[in-house]
Image 1 (cartoon, rainbow, N blue to C red):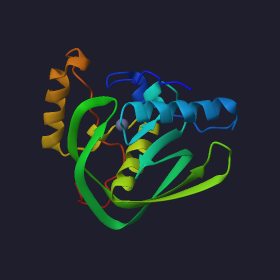
Image 2: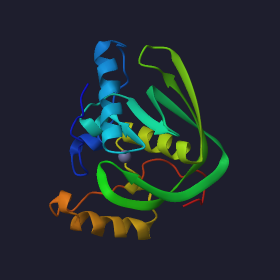
Image 3: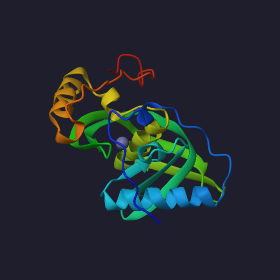
Image 4: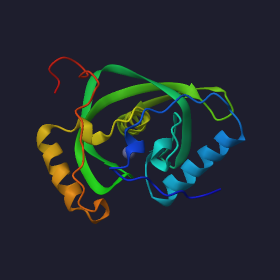
Length: 183
Ligand SMILES: [Zn+2]
């Protein structure tokens, strides 16, 4: 299929809430293929449809060499444990920062053929699932950084060649903390 241009931070499409997929048709299969191709070409661990300008609830991921996808994902946080590690985003190229995430999640959803799907994620895969599902709600990992890392990210983005010196809008996550007092 096709490698599509990746939308960069500052593009409003990355801040919009995507809508659920209704038609499991060829268009959807083409979208999944384009997402996979674009993700692999960019050497990313995951990519969500808004990152190529499509406002549908679909993401692809690659983990331990296996490429997967989830349509209409619903993520459930498992347990209370968190992890803290380096995270990056194809829409914020070359600027990884340490981000706090839940350690373990389960996502349910559908394949591009409309079959029910369940993916259990631990560690790195859990980060990818949380990161990509956030994209579908217009949330970027920058929104989840602690204040110090957020300031560093703002400065780094402003200085980055690809940003053209835009002053980016980083939002505080609209989500409730994972548990009271955890941030
Ligand atoms: Zn991302």
